[in-house]
Amino acid sequence: MPVRSVALAVVVVCCGVIVPSAALAQSNPPPVVGQSLKSPAEFESIGDKAARSRAMFTEIARVLTHPRCMNCHPAGANPQQGSDRHEHLPPVWREDVASGAIGTNCSACHHDENFAVSEATTYKSIPGHPRWGFAPLSMAWQGKSISDICRQIKDVNRNGGRDLKLLQEHIAKDDLVAWGWNPGPGREPAPGSQEAAGKLVQAWIDTGAECPLSPPSINPQ
Figure 1 (cartoon, one colour):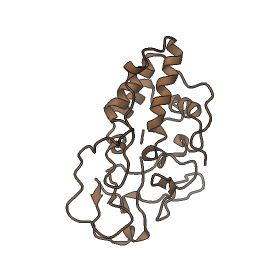
Figure 2 (cartoon, rainbow, N blue to C red):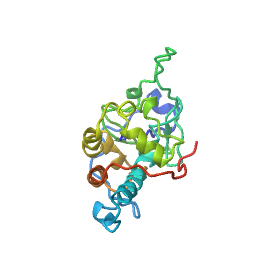
Figure 3 (cartoon, one colour):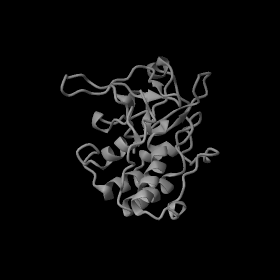
Figure 4 (cartoon, rainbow, N blue to C red):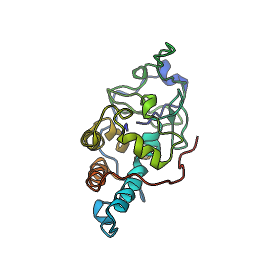
């Protein structure tokens, strides 16, 4: 799922602020209180298989629509950052092959791993990963309902060519998706854990990968 979030706060970060040599440890942070994910077993009481599948996807959507994922699945040309999903600072742009617009090189600021920041700043760390970036426009989730997102991530023409098996592997095992649960100091991790999300996605698939019928949009622009 990118699952991916961007968390720089001021232009000076990309203009040469020296990050302390000690990188932030890549250990899993403790889950935020109230942010656990339900297990597949907790949906067993829903007798109708399709309804159970839809209910599980609604739970999965708590991860997909969390700022750690949503910030790098924007509908526009710019990613977002922070729990309030404000526009990324310094300004960052998506590559646009059609118009010839060159995208921002994220690695200029985001390196191979999270780094703690000791300077007096409004943020505590700079996120990082070797493949840091934001999702192509075909994977934009911003402003869409849970139902729309569900149909989109099942569509191989809009999800990077992944069938359901590869989609589950992407969420359950991809190390960039894993960042959402290890975002560094100053950021709330996505609900649950990558393992829990992977099990929930597999259970959703096993019950037919049904999409919620018509819920309201939960992440309006």
